[in-house]
Image 1 (cartoon, helix red, strand yellow):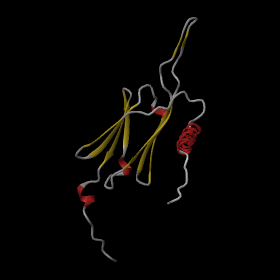
Image 2 (tube, rainbow, N blue to C red):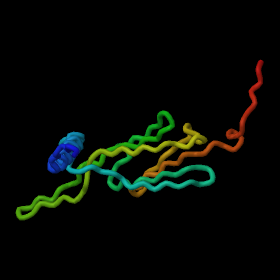
Image 3 (cartoon, rainbow, N blue to C red):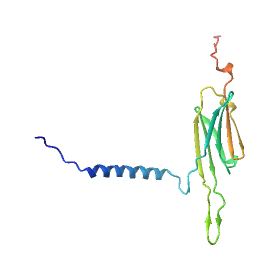
Image 4 (cartoon, rainbow, N blue to C red):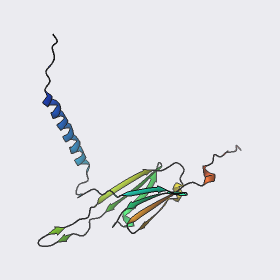
Length: 146
């Protein structure tokens, strides 16, 4: 006859709840204080013959509040949507706009011309154009030794 140890099935369930609470608390601590909601702009990307295109929906955000950087083959677009005007009346309060900081990062393909990346904001849509290297720049080159 084998002796088996009795295990309490509720102990495992309690561990699961403790783990879930720890995870939720850590996520809550990571949020910026005072922010009503996180803002994550929608992104569309496509490839053309001569360039890659990234479009972000940023309605109501001024171009001065947007920053675009490249570092270590990563394109980062960040900015902040400011709080919109609120309607406060005697009988109601209304504010529907989300606000907060956002950061979106994209790993760039190897054969792009980082020096010629440009962006334009029009009608609430930011378009970033990432030119591909010219065909002659893509070919392997033999370097002469002098």
